[in-house]
Length: 415
Image (cartoon, rainbow, N blue to C red; front, side):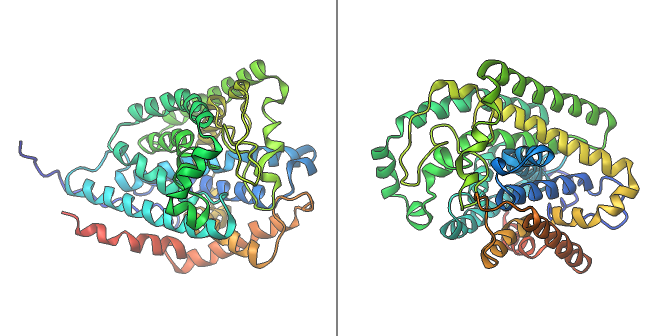
């Protein structure tokens, strides 16, 4: 069967390139609101990594901290799925030569992020999400040509099935099994974040985090500038959030949403983000894995990895993305004022990696009980905003975004 060459497509924009100046709305398949949402995700991770722990906050500050726990990294992952569609074809999937080159670019990015994540995990531990991103991208690669509805169905199916599967698999991963697998895993020997962690037992295991990425891919295939789409997504996001957290509260009790946020790596010096997934949420530092009751599947706490957590977090991510998009389209004055923050979203990789480097260089306490002040967090947010605003005036991409884009140039030679 011969394959006809599709019409020449305009190249998809880089997901880390800023929108043209004075652009009021969608530009070359990209929405300014998505960059704003990405910046909010970055700042949310700053809150978790640098801000006071939940136990040291009160009132509004407590809610800010609680919402940031888990939801910021989920928003980050959802937007990563959106970014895949900017490469693979925004509204329509690329086919033929363009499609092969796009998939090659995604694969190269995945390998680079896995390598970068491994290097950073050697210094900062398993809380680094970049290596997990590399795995997400590789696993999502076969799905990049699917339509929005099909992607949504796949994400929903995984949200319903994956947590229960993760619970069963984790019950089989005894200490001896884990040690046997890790003994032959070069990634684990390098950074103590091996294949088993990336897929099942780490902070952001692919099995229960792929629904976020695939949901973002589905959003990437939609026309977010359409008022009808915006209204439907807002209703969907609100419905998912209310249904998931409401049902979890009904089934698991009042402590279902907060109990897991008060434990886990967010209270450790490593600056983790919320609790670990099913089967390892309370894992001690010696690497052993205590058993968790089946009732934990009813909770919806940050990083609990349950169906309720996944569905509720996707709902929150949809609301943030739609809200940011609508705000940037309908409030031009706010859009102009938010330009420095939007610039952070265009170089989110730089902002994410940079805050770890600065945190280490400045010896800033990270999520420990001794960190009571919000001042360090505010300084990091201000520093990232000022840097991004100045850098974006002279360069099209952030420093690490430029290097990541350069690494994918060999994909042009794919035929």
